[in-house]
Length: 383
Image (cartoon, rainbow, N blue to C red; front, top):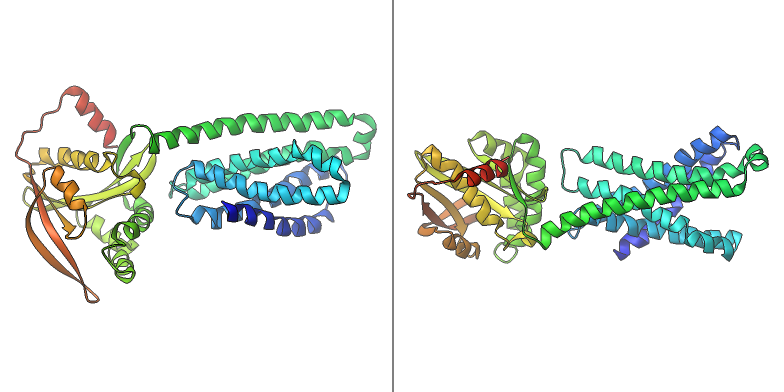
């Protein structure tokens, strides 16, 4: 958070440089002032802030909920607004800076909230990420450009003579008010998602994955694997196995080998993935199930395995197998779900590494009975 703020301060440098170059191409005509407000000022400043948000804040492990997009965006914007206000105080005096404390500084915050809302969504939507980035920049630029247009139009000589400054200031305040109202709504949307993600009962759904979801699966694996296996495997082995099993080529191959991948969502946010497939007649294997660490212990894993069992039993499945590392505490979790150890296995995966696993099995001998409400829930869950 501190670095986001400090990097936000530095975004003033490229913004001033570009704005000074652009100024020579605009005059004080009404059209020129409006175009300059949107393109030479608003777009330049919002793009500068976006670059910090995208290439620093967005990449942090702590960016783990949509609301973080707003949090980090506001911090970057406040860094920018703080140093900008210092410049205004130096150039025009404290009285101007004092007024800006209650107008331009909160305005920068509202522009950031609009951008951060879409960047927060983009963090968990690989397919539409570029579109969401674009919407964030566009929304912030429109709000910023509209606010600045009212302030800068007073520089036109004809408007100075025929329109009161109070009207321009009122227009700027009106646009700020609209931005504040919109910002409050966007914050509430992400706050509700955060509540469902971390505090209230999970709102879980499952999606059958396709090749389009491979980048999302890879992202999830990069977040889960290092934390899951850091105390069991060496960093080099973790890196080797991630490349071996979670490269794009490897995942494409697994999907074409009759392995069904699932992505688990909580409140619409991807929190894990799983894959399974038939390995012998009526015998299925759970190849993978990984849940983000902050979402473990909330019933998500049980929910996924229950859904897989309800999917395979009508197909004649009599047992569900899985492998688990002999040092992985997840073994206890599987035992609570009715899995038992039926053997051990040491799999040579190359480069001198082995997977030292327990083989576990859950018999699926009990009949599958669903009442109408459960059946409907399953249809909703298996999207």
